View (cartoon, rainbow, N blue to C red):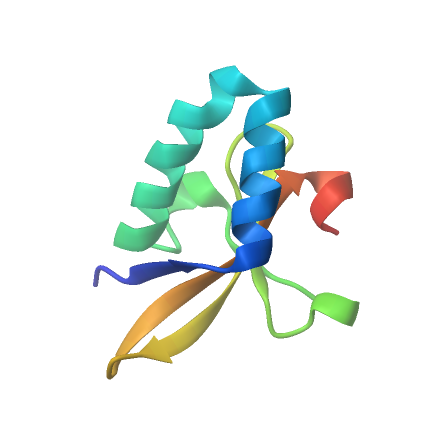
Length: 93
């Protein structure tokens, strides 16, 4: 089931910041986001539930040290993915 991706303002800011630091990763990030929309639990993404202050959120791996934090939400009567943050492991956790 394909889900809509809803980028939050924080996701857009962190994405721009990450793209400035790592311009070669931008195309890889786009392909990972497409895969996330298509199948959020694809084995390549290593999607997992978060605990602690990020409880209720999920994270996916978008490369060796790149993480995408998101939540499943309802949008226009269908399940969607609210993108919360993107960055290295230390930046998003």
